[in-house]
Image (cartoon, rainbow, N blue to C red; front, side, top):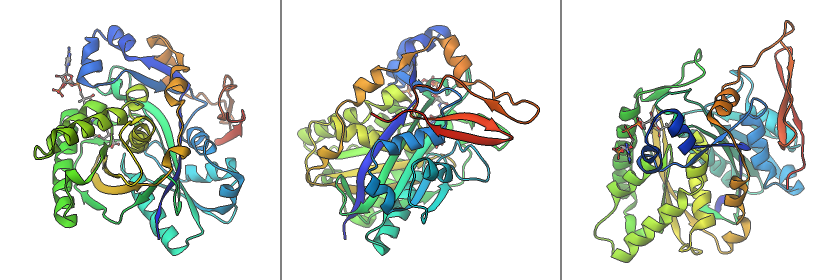
Length: 392
Ligand code: HMG
């Protein structure tokens, strides 16, 4: 049975910080960010937008009433959860009005966990072929004002519907994972921002790519020539470009090398304007590739490298389905260009706004009129979400 991704949705913040503005405010050469990191803009969210509202909005983008009735599992992969106990998936299940007899839960391992969620979804559908599983990767990446990772922040959510006979991608059964216990990036419960050993993290990313890719090739007998495109986890696109150069097989024809490079360029277009969205980054790269590549065709094999600090890495592949382009959008870059541009002072105030609760541990928010879903209030420690706008 063919199992894979039937639909992909995406949501991000409605505000944007241009990195040339950040560079000026931080007295940094703008080319360090545009060429050194290959980043242009970052999506910024207000306090009324979180992983629940972004996740529900990304799913709203793709679900029909029939899907809502057939989904029997909702998995939210995140490392910026809003509660230590209650899963964001439970809020999202309710906001989307999904079949009550569904299983909903959250998964965590830094930026990696959506990959595990997809594999679990695949196993579930293989046992229950009429099931549909909603996998949502949702995160807000906040490093802090003037932190070394500040230009690599971002916010966004990817929703993927995993089914039998999918209309976009069929998963192959070739996943190779690696776990290594390192402290390259982590966020203790008492901290709102992560601790990062930046240079160490980049070396670990590249070494996990090298060693997992070598093991993948050994186990499957496949090589780079067997793939039309390589998608990478994108903490910032320049690191993935280093990854591509590291594994580029010089025995490929010049034409194959150019095609891999051009497909890579297509895969980073959205991340260059959104920033790191942690669990969703790899899949934002996949979506960007599928919606912007001029080379892809049905039957092409795509390989994906997932990396989550801490660290877990995984490489797996999928094949493009005939007619896949009918499930995609062509207006995504234009939508990103409609975000409201913030000054650096506005970004600092909005992205790091603390929630102030009254003596009953409550507060009501305003200013969410343009969101599809919003955190509208906190009432006696309980987060209250509402649908605000019908999705276009
Ligand atoms: P930095 O201070 O920007 O580092 O921090 P840099 O001084 O090395 O500069 C970056 C690049 O800009 C260098 O290029 C410079 O040469 C270049 P490279 O040597 O790498 O090729 N540069 C210039 N280029 C053109 N014109 C100029 C210029 N000046 C300098 N004028 C760092 C970079 C990644 C450390 C920082 O952004 C950071 O801490 N980021 C957060 C951590 C991170 O993203 N790590 C990636 C691997 S870990 C991962 O992927 C997991 C993660 O997503 C989290 C999770 O799993 O949950 C992060």
